[in-house]
Picture 1: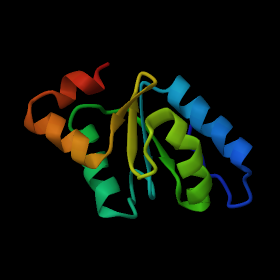
Picture 2 (picture 1 turned 30 degrees about the horizontal axis):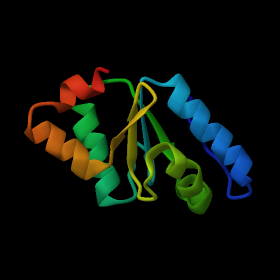
Picture 3 (picture 1 turned 135 degrees about the vertical axis):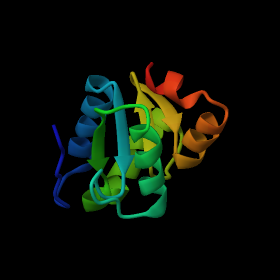
Length: 113
């Protein structure tokens, strides 16, 4: 299930997609670009960190509707920055938080839920 939203999506449509992605995936990363072609260094870093421990995870490209995605994610996380990682419906953090968890040896356990 890969979302390829168009820029013509309404805020309500993006909110529905965000809610669905968070609820229906064990691990989901909202990022700029996709897993194969990240469009920013932070998104690349997040993909690499998660991929060390989890083979299957969902990515959602926020670039086609960036402002709508920021607005839809903020109630879940309290953050507007991208990337954002969720595990079992709970906000974990961005690439810096993932890196800190990895340095402390806690990322694998966090990603396993």
